[in-house]
Length: 59
Image 1 (cartoon, rainbow, N blue to C red):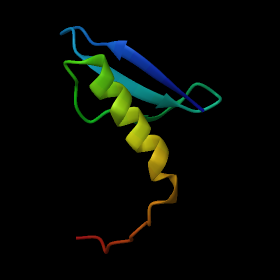
Image 2: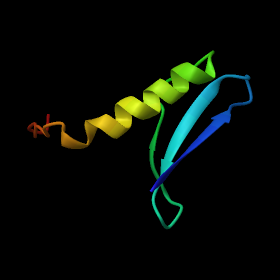
Image 3: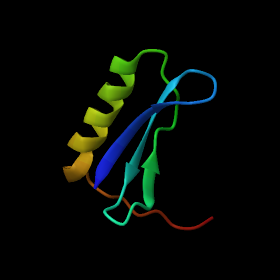
């Protein structure tokens, strides 16, 4: 897997997480003015690998 860090058409920073087959797994849910903030979002995503998973019932 790998992250792609880029500027969108509005000039804001975003990231995408890609699988080894280059398919998108996740995208940033927001855009960032500063590149460092987008990089921080990537670090938060990387550190969430051991976060618990909760299942909810369908509504």
